[in-house]
Length: 199
Image (cartoon, rainbow, N blue to C red):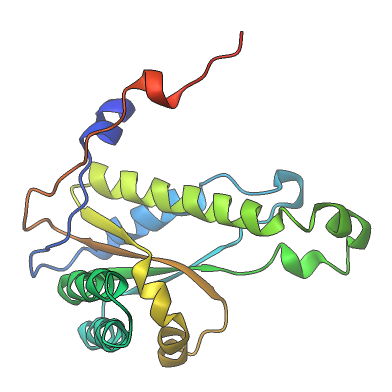
């Protein structure tokens, strides 16, 4: 499929069939993620870490953590988090995407450079991790797998990390599965509203 067509026709999927995703397909999706742009390239820092969960009991526990947290939040956030909990609960595979902090760990080794660029390091790490997630979403779509990129479970990241014994910074949750709905895609602004050319 033409890449632009794939980007434009991909839809977020929030309901999945109770059907496992073959390991070979999961591996291809993760491989697409690790081929995202890294920053800065000369340091060969690839700040993403992935925890891939297919064990139903663990997925259920993560869903329950999100649901419990939703009951403690105010209006709006609680609705989004409880919806995220439902999406996680029905997913055959969940990928937790972490920032390894490898770029920040170079602080002592490259002190002068870090002092000059320290302010943009968190943004650079987040940009690279976001590109990895986008690669995985597009690869999943090309392989016939639906996906949903979730940020709301970050309200529960401490509890999720405690469950998994992880200390890195949780950046996002990606659910994957065979679609049990058509999904939807919101319309986009016309190019004229989104672009300014300087020639």
